[in-house]
Length: 474
Figure 1 (cartoon, rainbow, N blue to C red):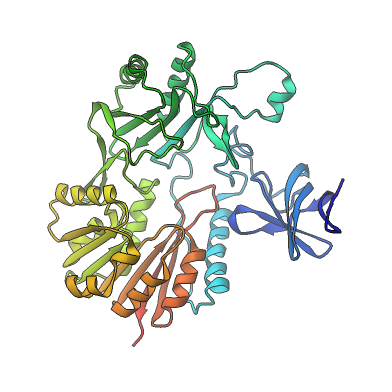
Figure 2 (cartoon, rainbow, N blue to C red; figure 1 turned 180 degrees about the horizontal axis):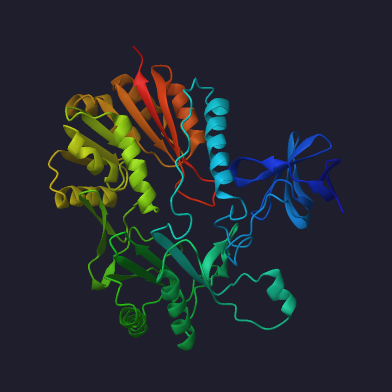
């Protein structure tokens, strides 16, 4: 069946077509009547023969979903998780890891050359992650009274509970897929989630309704560290003190390894909790992570790279590319909780960190104090308004700038201010090579790119980190 819009067929079914290659953002591509079709969904691989539903046809391309895999590609491998294909995470489980790394390297190369049109040195081989399972130190699970049912569950025609504790289904914020076992975080992460689910069901606690904004249990966050520390934070949406205490005591008694047990009462219409008060039920309001001889305190609200062991490799690359001798003034932009700033401080004369989130800056200051670092200085403010010529005149012209912006990249005024400050070296760490390419195109007016180093922080996803060193043109 096809739907016509303004005389042009907008949606239609292709009964059989072969998937040709991977594309950006984890999609795949095929070609039909000379037009490129971008295929959504995780359970698809080049070489697959599939039945497609084209749901959006544009002038130069179309978008489609897979209705059925008619013949599987011989290049596939078996996914390891029972939730693969439905859960929104780990979408490349069916892709061999070496192939994943090659795809990510190609993504960096394509976006820097196609978007940035940059003159590049030879891009270094991507640094893969030693761990491809159980590599995350933080996961959040959502309670919902609107469970996502798989096709198999629907076909059973058996009444099942609509409650679920798990992950949001992509593009359906109110629907949650119940998770039995997740391969992203080491135990007892799964055991804690399942124990809380069973305790909630035994006591008939209500799961959150994301449409009506009602219910008792809302969210659970689990954080771990390489030191063995473990943090749990539960979000409640109703102030039922006796039930809250019962939940927290159950977790405390059954999982003594949790040394930071916290909860939040969140009665807002969204899950963000950065403006809410943390209640610590047991232990410290933080856990600790270590890198070399440094200790980092991580609170409930703290940002920390979610792959701890690979983050250490990323930071070592960043420090090495900065080429510090101990005499440099370093600016660390978008410093977050100051992890990079504190990590490089012993190799620098002074490090100034700037970050938008005030709570993160407080964490950065605490971590500097914990590690007895007296050559770091942190400021909280909007980067566009804070990093000005006046600020640089007051605090000194940087010799080296390290910048690790969010996915949107740096605002152009920030890039222009950097170019006016003209540090001899810029190390640009990015989680989005597309926006990095845009910024590098501007910086290339005054800088040469000397090193490009991709890093895989998130195996089985299309995401890639990229580190670039820029040197001031002579």
